[in-house]
Length: 138
Length: 148
Ligand SMILES: Nc1ncnc2c1ncn2[C@@H]1O[C@H](COP(=O)(O)OP(=O)(O)O)[C@@H](O)[C@H]1O
Ligand SMILES: [Mg+2]
Image 1: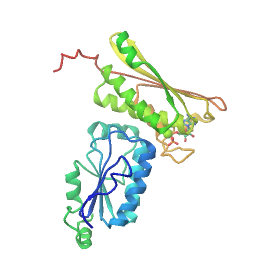
Image 2: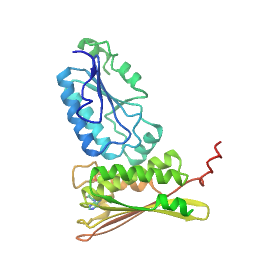
Image 3: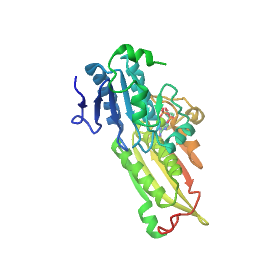
Image 4: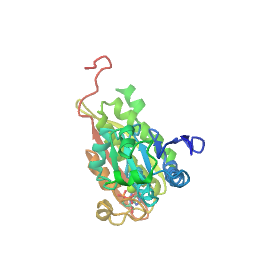
């Protein structure tokens, strides 16, 4: 399976395959329907492309409310059932502060400061062997 | 300030999830215009997003009224969300973190209350719900040249 854009045509959210990892970059403000569509698209893409990791880059996202927070948590929970790990990358400091005050600390979500750090956390784009993935777990 | 008010004050419909996108943009621009810091803007827009989604999902749609408020040198933004939906019978329960009558996380009302400076809710079963929030910019807006 070669690398590249997977679903640039189906929605406004580009999904990029980088080796063993799906890289999803969220736009600054996405409407609820699109967020739910994305949840479905990512699950299907994990299975179709047999990736072991999903990186959701939210560095462009201006706010995370309880709806988007729930969608992110459900994407991670769904991916886990499909044997893939999810890392949410690049949350803005103002968004993080606001989430804490809102009361959403999203304990099930792994985070990284940037998409690059997230890919590294997942074992790098070139590591495709499941055995390596398991070892890096934890 | 009348020039600012013309760009801040508005009545916005809340009928679809696309209306929520537009509403968040308006509230952010209005807050920025009044001198809200980035964190203050983010808190207010997040609260607005929670309350507008409640208006849409639980209240069956309604509208948001945005008003500039001034107290001395302080600039604030008042947001009033209203709907003619089923109303809320038990307000204390609705405000409790984690309570939802639907599929949400139940963090919207309580969370929004924490994110703003003033919060009030007026709801009558069978008549509708009005939620009003106000937040203030910590500093007065600076003139454009005056960046430091
Ligand atoms: N505008 C409204 N009209 C009717 N009921 C409402 C409204 N806003 C909130 N509620 C009630 O309060 C509950 C809690 O709201 P919230 O904290 O935002 O959680 P959630 O929206 O996730 O259910 C809702 O589940 C609903 O029962
Ligand atoms: Mg809600």
